[in-house]
Amino acid sequence: MPHRPTPHRVRLRTVLALATAGVIGAGAAVFFNGSASAGTTLGASAAEKGRYFGAAVAAGKLSNSTYTGILDREFNMITPENEMKWDATEPSQGQFRYTSADQIVAHAQAHGQRMRGHALTWHQQQPGWAQSMSGTALRNAMINHITNVAGHYKGKIYAWDVVNEAFADGGSGGRRDSNLQRTGNDWIEVAFRTARAADPGAKLCYNDYNTDGINAKSTGIYNMVRDFKSRGVPIDCVGFQSHLGGLPPSDYQANLQRFADLGVDVQITELDISGSNQANAYAAVVKACLAVSRCTGITVWGIRDSDSWRTGENPLLFDGNGNKKAAYTSTLNALNGPGSTVSTPPVSSPPVSSSPSNPGGSGCTAVVTLNQWDGGFVANIRVTAGSAALNGWTVTVTLASGATITNAWSADRSGGSGTVRFTNVAYNGQVGAGQSTEFGFQATGSGAGLSPTCAGR
Ligand code: XIL
Image 1 (tube, rainbow, N blue to C red):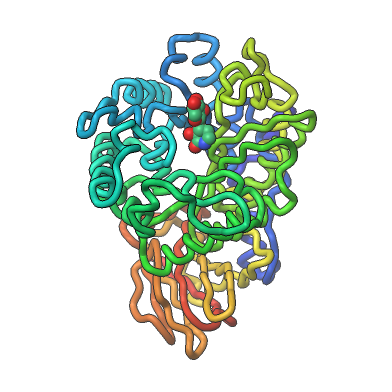
Image 2: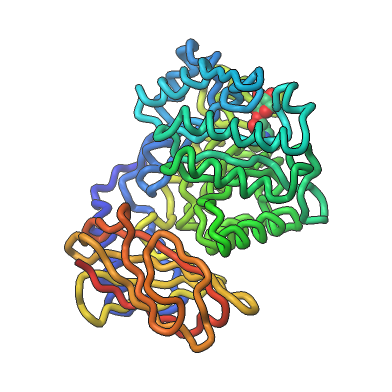
């Protein structure tokens, strides 16, 4: 890959200038053309697009220098493959054991890598004592487990898989039967609220498999996330495991996008791909993630084929000797290719984006992406600073008559109908020149004609 000197910033300003001038109108999808300086590792190339590239890691392999050599060269996010699961962290009730997981966290901290925590609750890999519990005793044990484990790692985890694999396969779109499910349908929201209290700084994710396309299972999860957002249950992200047997389904990107449009980040959390079309399939997954502005990163489930849980299927990016495979090259090329950066307006099809507007000329623009359904909508609003940094912002929106806000995130608001003002919260008021931040809200009624205006401080 030739190194082209075009700096990132210059291209970004060009796009913003076009956007501000109204050249890019409603429904426009903005992509950079991939001429950014091409990274030479998965982590660096993902970082150029504002994303991470991670791997599942086993503590027992951290003494293998081939393994750690690849890990520390290529990856900037780590998920413990088994070490943070319930059976590993609480082998006897009330007795917590963090030795192996702590080793992985220490490695990550020493090498500038972030951590995804996996998994606070799951029907599998429960300790024997929990497997044989039920009812209130199990519910309380779950709450105690989350409080302790998320509390132990407080401030050290980028995102937690709070609940793993709680939905059933097949056409029902409903929950999987499990001892946790039998404690009551509210167990998932209790788990999320408990995790938020224990580690308020971590993003909280729901994670599952066979959810890669738009199907009954992913729609069941979509409806749960929409419900959580409407009722203020704390959920920040949805993980798509993506254990694939070839190309992802054709609606893979659309599926990621519909979740993102609910106001959550999406992440590819356990990627591995078997089959002869492996290199193309990896590239297709990367391209889909890069096309969804809220797809914040990709994690592969192991490093070398010999590390994979899918024994004999060779589904990873490095062979057993640690050599790069064709799938590695296609993945790196896709990361270096076209794709939205986190600073571009979101892709807006099928949702509709407004033109940026800034009549006050006060140093910021606001662009809305709308996901309307019968009777309600979610609006995500991207605030972008102009040529000067912001020390705070206020976005004003006038809702259509009859529309009422039920829930908002990442901003404070005054009012719920008519003209509503949103101001930044503590963590997203400072926006660098040309940089963006997002907030959103859900409302009943119609989102037609929303045209937010932005005032900066
Ligand atoms: C797997 C691990 O890779 C194996 O080592 C272990 O024996 C079983 O679990 N979905 C998940 C992961 O969320 O935790 C699983 O990991 C793979 C499927």
